[in-house]
Length: 246
Image (cartoon, rainbow, N blue to C red; front, side):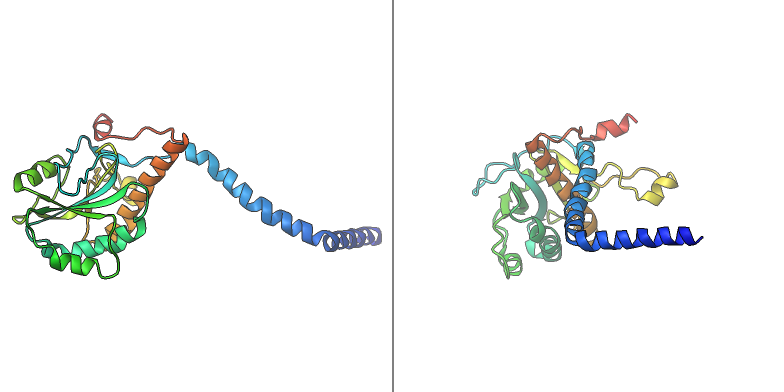
């Protein structure tokens, strides 16, 4: 027992002296290699990236307009404010705070709001422009028939109201595909085998939808395009037709 105690004492003494002598390089080594190791664990997951679903293809292009705004080659959040834009003040302010302020300045990002020709935008712009010039937010004036054609090329549960307004907004990718979630069930709903429900558009009255779902979906879409530019994107985007065949 004495010999064992002596051995452990000498081992403890040696380890203590070793640590004191090499404390600084050991600490620096840990600080350097820990984040590198973490990144190495993350790296393989980039190649199994899940893209944001395509819920509707071939959204029609905007007709020629005064500001030459188009959907092609842009990542667009599309909204409809019709003949009375002031009626959409709440949804527009929610959209600005939760989405525009977060993604403004991202490459090819824009918000496009469709309004009637000659619609009075004074009050809405006054509220929106209080703290920002909204460089990436465009208002496009269209005829009633052009608005209906554009809206009908989208997938939406909620219809336009009598003033041409809808509370939902739509994510359109650079190829004019409408993006969203083909299966928007929560984990518990999947475990209980609840019926599949999709998320094709985002209700701007519900702040939680903008903050927790739309914000995340846009982040996924931007990541998809960033990885495509770098040649790191190996996933095929799931389409509505794919889900029907399952």
